[in-house]
Length: 459
Image (cartoon, rainbow, N blue to C red; front, side):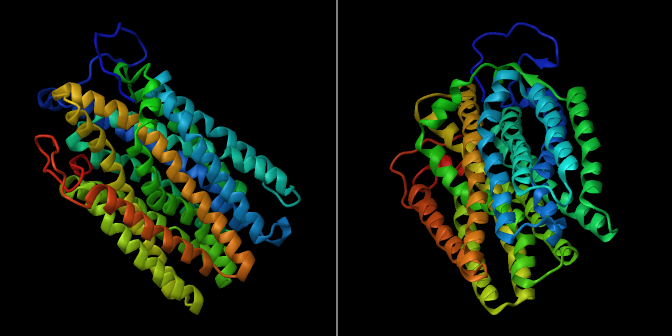
């Protein structure tokens, strides 16, 4: 959330940057790019560990055999609640960047990851009640908040022309924390280790992330003290439209990441080791492709990429319905991986749309130059937190849908039919709002082409 800088902020310690103008190409070339890239790197590291901690229960449940006394429905409920907390905390985490500064909050948010990892280390053994597991699992939700604060912070560092790539790289590097912890779990299971071995690996990594954030990141004074931006963003209809679309992309990514291993165990009878061999592939490719989605959106327009991405997601889901009903494991796994890739691609394209929407709304309101850029950064940074929070709720819906589908029929087919219907609606919304007809009069930035309906969706 970036506030207009009406005057030079007073000098202060603690790695505060007083003046920041990434849209100035001379400033960017001489100083800005180097500083922005450094902050991006360490932001990715912290967010990466945060995603791993948030999704650690997707692999911990693979360790939890019959001796733990949990049913498949219990496990789906547990992962649903972890996802829910991760979505909810994204809202205050967005505000935290404006309250404390991006570097300062990264230190705090990274340090908070010690709470769920240490708590899980203590209780992770047979005989622990489901209620205790549920409470400790809820603590892991704080890892989901790191995404919102990281995206809000990095959005302020980069110029509009670089945001698709930068935000895609930031989010993709964070998202890859999902397959990494799944790969680590595969190694631990393969070596006949227990869940505490996995947790013991991550506890020191959390400390490393917090220390490096303190040493190498910066705060921007232009981001400080603008908590009102979230309220302004919440009043804009496009914030909620984009949140709905993000349910379809990121909600799918995180929901499938939590559920994939359990679906393989419950529907196809895979052992924990067999499931672990497969679960990391989809999240890995989906994470790696996210910056590509941002790049494609930079070049062709976020709305166009998002629209056709939903078409492909619906088609893949239709094949999954067939594979699930036919119990075809090779087809099921192959197409599920494709769906992960598409969700990652859509994550990049939808997030690229957000800065462009608010920048062009500023241009349409008569603002120009740096004033329009500041206004766009301010509202887009705030909107990202809200959009990220609502989008993550899609992961809750996916796990609850699987839970109900398995309770009703013993398969995930019913859940996939529901997802197919959602992607069709998301396609229709993208087309109707952003691509339905040529706009009568739009004002686009100097580097953007006018687009159908709303040119700012294509910036």
